[in-house]
Length: 108
Length: 111
Image 1 (tube, helix red, strand yellow):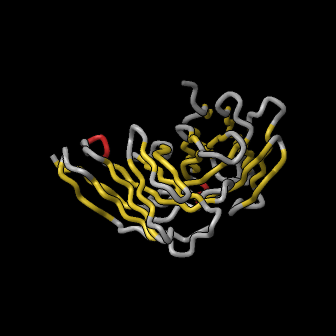
Image 2 (tube, rainbow over the protein chains, first blue to last red; image 1 turned 90 degrees about the vertical axis):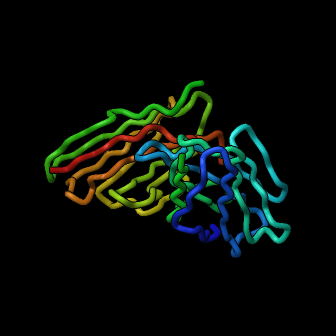
């Protein structure tokens, strides 16, 4: 599974878009990019995943570069409840290897 | 929608005791995963089962064992508990190897 690199922490103003980057330069052709978040000791929550194309759901958008070496998770209108640790995971379908993630703080 | 159920939610044990954690996957999910998250750490994969067979193994100590039953629920058995086993234990389930949905976790404290 691809090793992923994320900034350790980010701040975002409430109501603004939060853009969380992830580097996964070693990702292989059949590895999906998954995004999860964990809010203080709760179970990780699935957000979105993609392979090559950009994806959007009710929670977020995922932008994957054409070479698939990096991606960006976009929370379009961040709220205080989006404060969490966000994990970017490269995965071929079985076990997930969580990296250190990005601790996002949404500021009022 | 139904979610992953884990029991118990909290468990306190003494050193060298045994513990059994249970996981009930989302209905129709056939794959179960176990993760351990120590204090201030990120979740670490322990073991997974697909259709009642072990499918992958991570950093699970030899003192731990797990299985998936005919109704797809899973149990993680932990023996000779050590202080370092104190952690959150998450179970996740998926339909084959699609996105995993995590339970609320069991907080194990070893005294």
